[in-house]
Length: 318
Image 1 (tube, one colour):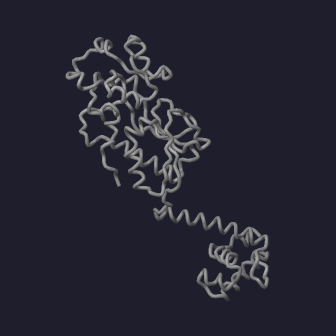
Image 2: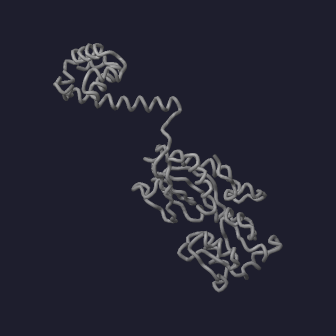
Image 3: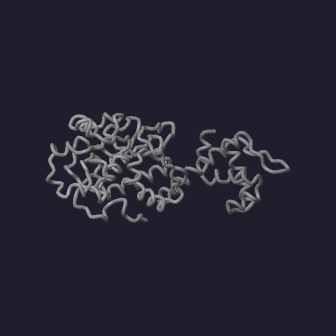
């Protein structure tokens, strides 16, 4: 059967599939745009070449034989593959759609990502975003999330993705308390009231700095959220280290010292290897990487940018 099988063309598979779908010759002929006699003659030729009947003729119509079922299954796979290749060649891949679960810390969502996510939704309205706010690693292998946006220098080895920026940290305080911030030296600053992340985040360099250089009685406020840290500084509770993208977006705050390289962390867009070719995952990663790239200097703490360059104040892009 191997050699006769090789002689089958795509039109032959289309004919077999049409007869199976229509359960008769007249309707199949109309479906593929030929006359009834052509379908009858060609089907007979195919069956003779294969040496197997593909249909049993009943009064109620044409029913597939086991050999016919195998060929129809193959025809369906071929139809799907041909359609997919055709879309790719024509640049018309299916539009991304469905639900996309994204995990990120609250600080990144509020300070940077929200306008970018709004712009993504404008570009891809068929994608529904489910945002999971968490600083803890979720199991992307078990689909706890499809994409993770994390600031880390050690992304999980079982995930793939791209490094899109580096998040720098600096020391900030209220501008009203420091009319000449450049004149403040670190020794004098250690006598001020300080704000720090909680001891549960003691592995972070910013927390270690406070533990090593600030007397415990001067650490007047601790919080286990980077967003809460920035809010506390803005409320006037004390000075503290926060990411530059958060401090520079708040007019009430001023930098008291240059960014500290040891505090910085890479910003990663991560997904599971099995998900990276999903249309909605790929579209999201590409879109967000481009958006973050547009604002990279601000995210990385470069000075001298005007307010229009700040992600939180940009209009959503089309």
